[in-house]
Image 1 (cartoon, rainbow, N blue to C red):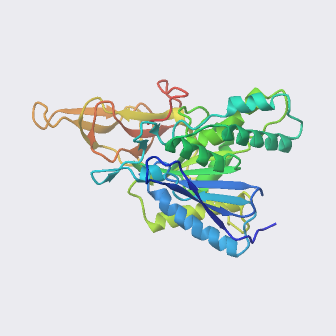
Image 2 (cartoon, rainbow, N blue to C red):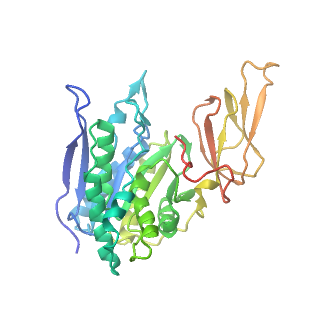
Length: 385
């Protein structure tokens, strides 16, 4: 049954970090609360990744139209600005919103992993009914999160965001990279859903993993389902009831209405195909890529300080051993000739590049998405801060 309920907008206060200071989260809700399927979308958890903020605005326009036309079937929650804390972090005219200045680290790391709590509470209580098991696990996840005691502003932000998304069927965390092609991250066990979303968005790469490490937002939403299914395999069926993805909306400078409108339209079509919205999305586009493993991504690292000179552009297909960039020492001997060639260890797509052109020793500056796992890439340590 489609919903003609008016959209609901609420504002959630974060803990006050200092006298006279108050930040809030704005949350838009469409459809009847508790109806299925539920979709959750948030933008710019890394606050200096601006493309998602504009995509969210176009998405809200589309949802407002769907609401007027009575095409909301499920429940849709949109947080158009997921990190007001990071948006306030300016230094010498630059927005620096990836890391919390209060020393809690990367805003997209350290979300609560509720698996162990839920496992203790549901063991021995599953039935042969998958839907009943999903309902039990969702309720227990909510209880587990409510028992967290986040006092400071950033941990409270993470708890609130996770609480809004934890019972969703589909979770979209909108990010971007420095310079990049559009790509997304998803779990190995939900490859088909990721391929369909990637086709809709025109993704250049789909990176699959099960244990990236760091407890990012998407894993906090989807990861417990995979781990609980493994732990409770002998007790009853546990579906992978949450598809959560991190969508990298190209690069930081790729902020324009053409991109944003197209990306929002793609997300709306995906929601139509999954029964969240009514309407005809048309034929599914042909996928632009095959999924590849996250541990097949070669992350190139600067061996010394110097000026980066790229020899390959975004979207280039490179062969193992090819020179991707050179590092120039501006004080080297002889002048103008001191260069280090940096080569890739894999054959694959040059997917992302660092926008800055002065590298520090050990700085990760480029990613090549290859088809085969690389021996130096380790499960649980696949994400780069």
